[in-house]
Image (cartoon, helix red, strand yellow):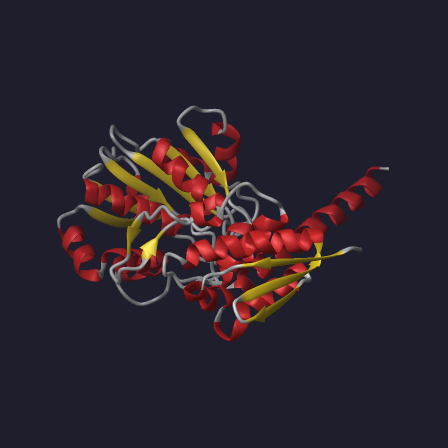
Length: 332
């Protein structure tokens, strides 16, 4: 294998951001691409196979562009830049990362971080109903919430309605003490947390008192018509087909609907069909409805979450193959 050497330039103000604390990002890039990086004075030399060096040049170029915005890089961004470079993708991390949806109460920008997330945001902007389907950590609900708050603040819609089915995740909570609201709140806590982080508790409480923001169990949606609203159904994999149909037919004029769920994490009783799975089959060809499939590559939580998702996918795929082999033997 021929060894290639290339010299690149990273401006001094950005080099420390790109390399990371204690060169942690530099070491990650060297290991992932199997290259060596030598820094002497202002000269940065890349040594490795021609393909690996070309990949590294693209990675450093993308990270340098992000660093020029005076942003601190994350492990997720570095990993994703490496992934894009290895695929020789025409998409640029800097381009994906440039569009800010809104800011949290602490001033942190909320924006897409992957191609999948960017496509998801574009679908929400352009379609009336969007299904965001994918594993934990891909930002399905959080990004939908950010888009809802952006639309609310700009006056595009007059209220936000957030809902999810009240299904226990393998635990029976019905005998907990307290009134009905106390029993319901634990199911809706993730939605409250996102609202508090983006809007702040004071703005949330003020708009809730006015009826402009509503967080409620899915069962409370029956019989309503929701005009001029941004409606988000979370944990949709735990709906029945009847509940999904009921929810989707609540949409009124001037409204936008986002449905999020993870088909691999159902808490429905055994043998119950998921309304999300049925909706994918029934509505996939309906105009103004988009289905966005996010994957483990779109996970933006701790890097270990992506590895956990991948490991479970391999395990479940292996189980399905074994079941098919058993079925084929019995059929003979």
